[in-house]
Length: 98
Image 1 (cartoon, helix red, strand yellow):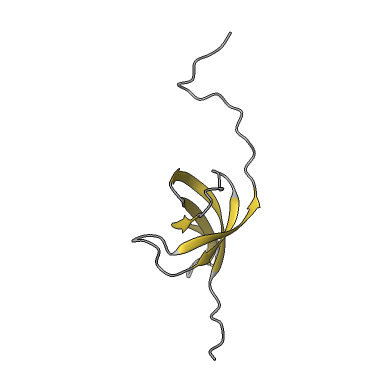
Image 2 (cartoon, one colour):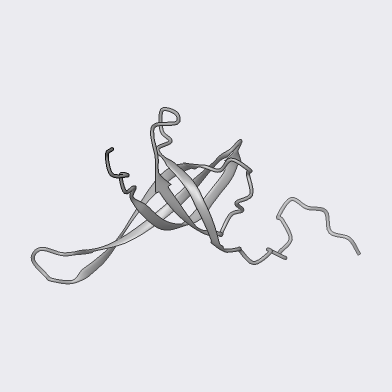
């Protein structure tokens, strides 16, 4: 019996949830610059599978690496850590009520 393979886990913020059962997550990492020895922030955007479509824009989530689910999707949403605060601003094209 083979030991169970450990999957990569990343933490990120949901940027978009416009697709069905798919969210775009921004994953941030820090990299040491070779010459100047400063830490730089690098961000990558990945598509993750959200089976119940429960993620909203701004949520902090944990994603787990999985088998290829589509051409671009190789991650799955494991857990929602923090919910985004509801946005109370008025949309620019929304009618103003007096």
